Image (cartoon, rainbow, N blue to C red; front, side, top):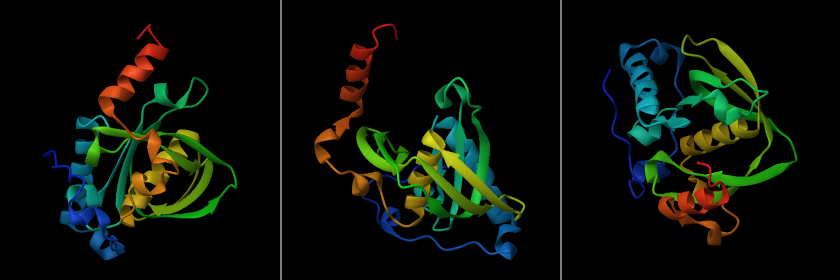
Length: 181
């Protein structure tokens, strides 16, 4: 499985809306291979999520993988999964602002408000319907990736651009806060 090239900030494909995937198209070798390659790329890039537009494919497919150590000690991680045509159908009123990055401009970090809890409907790789209730980091990653499907970047969601910083400064800031790392 080849690793796909990540589309970078400034490429117009990142600002376009992705097309829905039909059940018939989902069954094609091209889409099956895209999903496999997206999963491989996500793992190779050590990311939490990847949307098809980030690999220059304007279809509504995302891949997500969250290791258990990032989810907190009481919550299991999110196994590597692909979601087809994901749609947020419900949100809580509560939003939490936290740091985000993006594989398409991995040199930046910014604070983004996101809903703490969401419910998403999607298909799995076989075309079976799923309903996912996601909280905290999982909800944040899903919102980030679903935004990509609509041509929205986390920069568009930031309330205050003053929090935007380089990855180098971000890592310094958090290393100073936790000197044991």
